[in-house]
Length: 62
Image 1: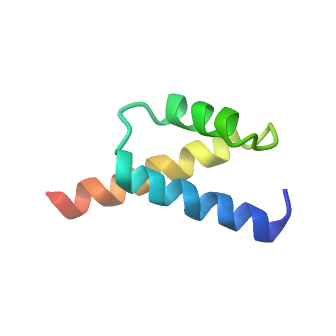
Image 2 (image 1 turned 60 degrees about the horizontal axis):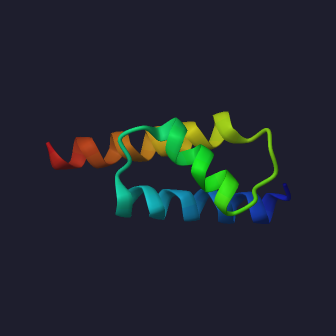
């Protein structure tokens, strides 16, 4: 995944996380990767992006 494309994927995933607020980050990333045909091998990194974004959302709400 190229750097520019990689950043676009991360930003898109952050936006979708803010919109949908998934309960299970791993499942959310798995569906995202399948739906948007992201190259394999990035699931763990993208899961961390979702978990970090959910952490930010939860801390701002509290």
